[in-house]
Structures are given as structure tokens and as C-alpha cells.
Length: 140
Image 1: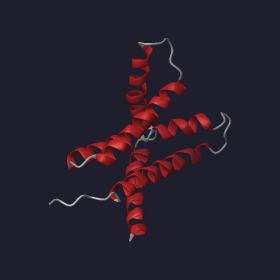
Image 2: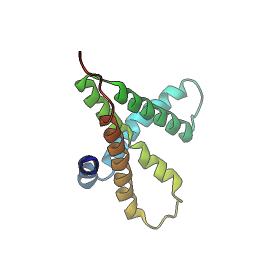
Image 3: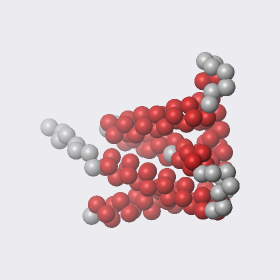
């Protein structure tokens, strides 16, 4: 039963990440990267001149971790769904990490979007799968 639930979550998250990639190639990456990364960079720019990309990615990852921890502790359904949506968007950090890790002359350029979709889907599925496993206190 747990395997079916995980595979269902994986399928849904793959479709959710794959559809924008098919119809608008890299559009979500530019929108999310500009909104989240640009905002973090502007905030950091107020404190230091020319913040590095590594620092922006580190803060982005910390923000994602905080959102996942909040998701685990929330009880309100509406807030939970909004937090899942925020985690969905923040997982685009995976794209930037893969781009930074790969060498500049990488020949399998057409594989990168597929790898990104698969990694983001697996991570989101794991977040949702283990979030659903938490023990609920009975309402007495």
C-alpha cells in the first residue's frame, strides 16, 4: 500500500513538473529563479556588495528546509496545501544546483531537463510521502 501511494505521488509530481517543461521550456526556471533568487540577491545586496551565487543557493535551500519543517507541523489543510505549493516552487533550486555541478562542456544537454524533473519529483514525493506518515493525535 505504501509503495502504491509513493508511486502515485511520484506520478502526480512528475506530471506537475513535466507539463510546464513541455509547453514552456525552462519558463518556470526563469520565473522562479528570477523571483526567488532575485529577491534573495536584492535582500543580500543591501547588506553586502555582490552576494555570491553559492550564498543565494544556500539561503534558498535553508528556506526550502524551513518550509518542509513547517509542512510537517501544520494541521490546517489550507495552510498545508499552500505550503506544498511553496515547496513545489522552491524545489526549482535543484535545477540551479545541477547546472552548477555539471561541467560547462557537458554533452548530454538534452538529458538535463529530464534529470531535473525526475529529481524534483522524487524529492517532492518523498516530502509528501513522509509528511502523510506522521502520527495524528486523536481528538478526545
